[in-house]
Amino acid sequence: MSWGFDYTIDVDEKDSVIYVKIYGKWKEETAERYHRDFKAEIDALSGRPWAKLVDLTNWKTSYDEVTDVLGKHMSWSRDNDIGLSLYVIDNTSTFRQLNEMFAKGGTKDISHTFRTYAEAERFLKQNWPKK
Image 1 (spheres, rainbow, N blue to C red):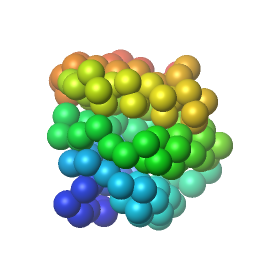
Image 2 (cartoon, one colour):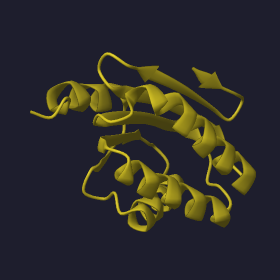
Image 3 (cartoon, rainbow, N blue to C red):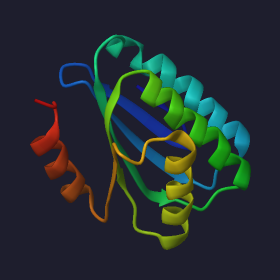
């Protein structure tokens, strides 16, 4: 598990699911550190499809350069076997920014947004692992 005041990353190796919680307003350096930590954490899932559930309810709209870094992170995820990407979000400003990241990362088709964590968990249980 990686954690800091900006994010936590928990890996469920058995079910191939990464659980992430994001906090605060990010700068470019925070996004780059997150990407490095994320890659290190999912090393255990290498070579098999995985899903992630990201809680963005405590995330604030971030600096524009963060959109580019996280768009690249999403593209990297796509190139490294992500099968399902779920986001819990309840803020219209951050929702707009998240959609920009989907577009930059090419992950619109595997990304889903939810207003509550319970909705996202239910969707995950019904759709993962992919049959």
